[in-house]
Image (tube, rainbow, N blue to C red; front, side, top):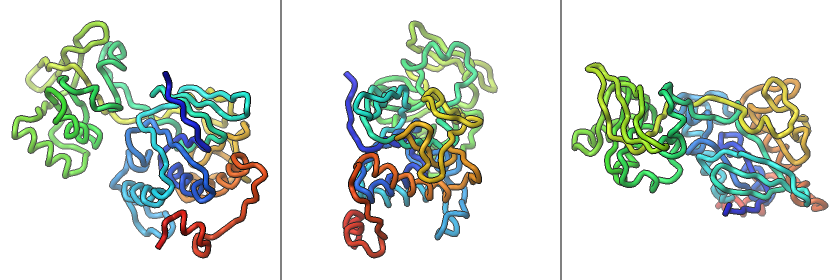
Length: 341
């Protein structure tokens, strides 16, 4: 049975703009659930350039993508948003009472009055490595994200990649897996130095294995993987493997959003500039995924769009309720919501 969740707003995308939307909605007492295909918050900002400086965030002369994400999470903490990571929206329909029914590939069903698409350039989807017949094992033995750690307990796990995701899961799965082997083309990594240091320490202690090379084939039957074929400098090697986690980066696709019946303009979602609503009432698009005359693809533009969207969302969720515009600097009620001193 699918889990049924009722909420005021569903936000698709946990990048900076989606996170700030939680804040603006929260000031208006709107509850939000946030869905993202990635396994962590931050979207493109944190996934593709977590340590790269950003210079055009107002009030922050220089901030990294990861630090901006961390600050936004701290800012929205008082509103207790519910996150659903490693999850993709698979179906959307309007129900008889005017609300939306949203289904995900994690067997969750949301009933909501408002949907906010804050998916950046589209859904970030994992790149499939060029390994013959890998699709036969996907979903059973080959996974592009870790949804439940228990699914890897007691298995021989092979992880491929040299970024943060590969190193993080090498460290996190080591205590539960039967064995963990990390495969990368070279002994240098793009991950956080501390994670690399910890991995090498585990490798030295014999608790994880590192192999240099490329995965060229898989062995198994009926979707169950048994071995991974590794091609290295000294030829081919067979690795025991019950689970394979390839982290080959991400590709941007509009994904299922393209089937939602919204007006699209060159794979972007057309919106108005009053409230950033799409052609479907109750569905809004903010951030890089939308388009309108004069649009600038800047994080600060997305923040502005989130603020105006939230005012319109409040009118949908609470029709007839008087909305009093307040400033956080002077409103004691807003300060109480924010748990300000």
